[in-house]
Length: 250
Image (cartoon, rainbow, N blue to C red; front, side):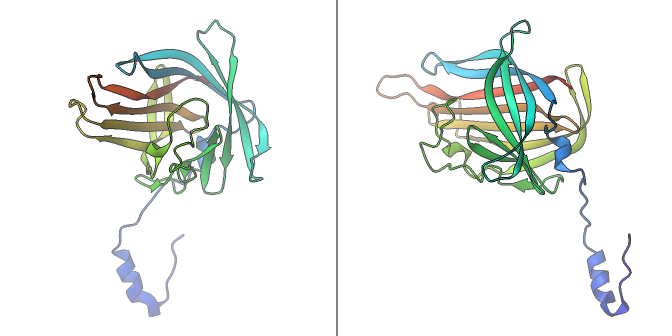
């Protein structure tokens, strides 16, 4: 509703009218979060690993499934939802329990807790170009902070990441599935030095896409560090990559 301003502040009104009015989506963040007990999302999971002493990479593919189990409370006493993560090699194999996550919807954000690491995955306001420190709760300065049991690398490379919204409320096609409304979060897209030269360099790329009424539908995470040749030993890569692509949901 348009406000009627008193004549005494007419000058301020005129000046304010010259400023660009910002608009953004009023969709609640919970619309893009998997948090209803019984709901699930099935993914194709492509895991990239560096093998042969870091001389080459290989991709191992699986199927993964996230199922919302129940509403619980997190270690801060806040309402949260427990998500069971399952994995299998082929569609004919039985699902095997692999991990347990927590998603914590708050008034202003969606937090995601994995292996005792807390990320701010979505943040208000939901508008193009808005950014926030999504890894603010990670102890990225402690070289021994990687306690997940999944990786032996420390978390220093995750320090000070700016998560940025792109393509708000845009359609997306994943295989044979057409999604009406999605939002993209670019968490990192950086590299250092020339990867074609035998010098220290790294590459970090992390993008996620969320669909309205479903949750996370796509993830592409790639982290690589290259150590140059020394003392007659060839250069090598360390790191890992994970790609998730939704193939089914209820």
